[in-house]
Image (cartoon, rainbow, N blue to C red):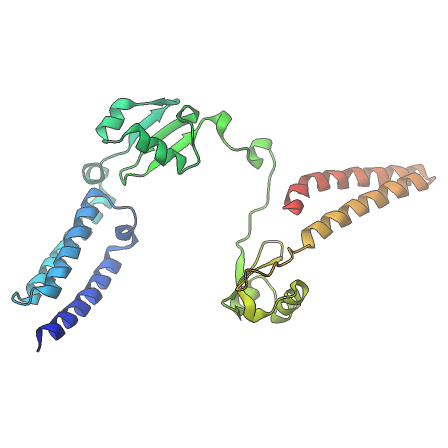
Length: 286
């Protein structure tokens, strides 16, 4: 067999073998790496290259070496799952970099991290002042996570004592100009409904790059032709307008009736509807 053909065969075999080994090692191996996983990745890559190019050596020895590395990696992962002490030795532990808004310089030096690098990592999390940070830690994988002080955290509905319904996952109902029947069925919609919504927007199915339906049943589309402006769905604004109209009608009924009991009932209903409108207005305006 010619050398060039042998290199091709060996490379293809190494790719397939590496794919199998990577699937065996799991997703963690291709995400944030620990020290040992980093070493393992480099070594396995080097061994795979050696198997592909070292024509004088026997390819089976490289396969054995790869298998041993993978077996060691699986053994280490098993020990990490079973023992916290082993996890501490192999992965080390997190290092506190900021506490109560104060940067801990000694810990920065320990992790060989400059203040510019620390601020760069904080800016990636939309934090521009170290003094606003309650607690920041460098994780064993090298990522920096930070918790803002209470007064600097974004306002959430739970802080205001407001309960909100869980958000339903948007469904992609059009991909590359093709309607997807399964996502439509998941949200209880039909192909006829999709065609009607596209007609409302004035676009054709084959011109839609991506179409998504949100939790409120509104269709949003992104077109291949970026020059075409697609009108935004109007279901939520229309619903808000109808609620306000109902409130106005109730107030009008309360003013026009002479019966005190009916007047009181209409006024109470109008007040309750006003509360509903105030609570739902942020959602219906978005």
